[in-house]
Length: 99
Image (cartoon, rainbow, N blue to C red):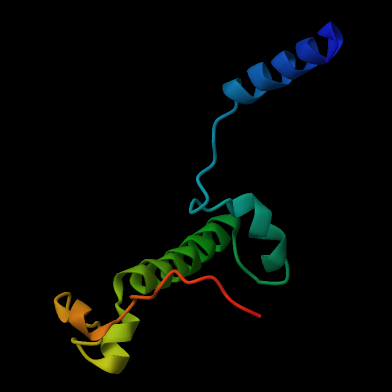
C-alpha cells in the first residue's frame, strides 16, 4: 500500500467519524415521502402517518423477538431434560478400518 492510499483511507475514515450514525430501526421520513405524493394530505399529516406505520411495524418486530414460538407450538417442555444424557451413547472404539 502506498502512502497515497494510506492518506486516502485516513481521509475517508475521518469523514466517516464525523457523520452521525443512523440506527437501523430509526425512520428516515424523507426516504418515504415520495410514496405519499398522491395523497391529499399536508406534509405534517404525511409525516405523522409514516411515523405511525413505522411504530406499528417496529412493534411487530419487537414482538417477534419476544415470543417463544417453539413453546407455543410444542408446549413448555419441548426441550429434553438436561439429565437425560444417559440416553445417548456416543462411545466407539478407535479401531482402524480394514479393507
